Image (tube, rainbow, N blue to C red):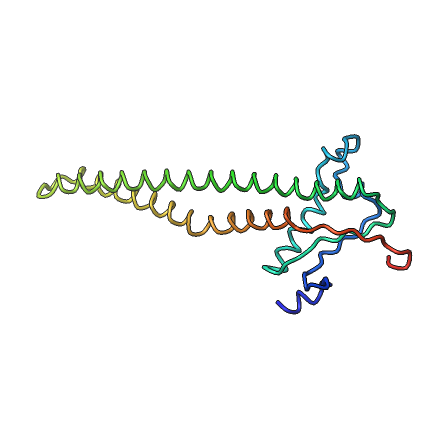
Length: 190
C-alpha cells in the first residue's frame, strides 16, 4: 500500500493530492454536451473513471482533488467545476443507493419466499408422516429444495453483493465532498 501512495503528492496537512492536468476547463466535460451550459454538462467519463480509480487506490486516506489547467480559468469556471464534481458524484451516489435498495428488496423477497416455502415443506412433511406416498414425498422434497435455494440466494445476495454496493456508495460520497483545488500550470510544468 505504501508504494502505491508514494505515487501521489501530499498537501501540507498530509492529504493525498489527486492531480489532474487538462488544457482548459472544457476538457473536463463530455463532448456530447458541447452546446449545453457547464452547469448542465456531464463530466468526461475518463475523468470520472480516473477519480474512481484513484480514490479506490488510495483507500481510506484523506485526499483533495487538484486541477491544473494550461489555460487559466476564472473563478466562475473553477466554482462550476467544484459544483460539477459535487453534483455528478452526488448523482452517482443516488444511482448507487437505488441499486442498493433494489438489491435489498430482492433479498427480502427471496428470503420471505424461502421462509414460506420452508414452512410449507415442514407442514407437508408433518402431514405426510407415516404415509408411503412417493408423489407427496417428492413434492415435499421439491419444496424443501426450492426453499433452501431461495434462502441461499437471499443470504449470498446480502453477504456477497451488499458490501461492494455499499463501498461504491461511500466512495461516491467521499469524492462529492472532496476539497477541489486549482493550480495554474506554468509553461515548464507540462
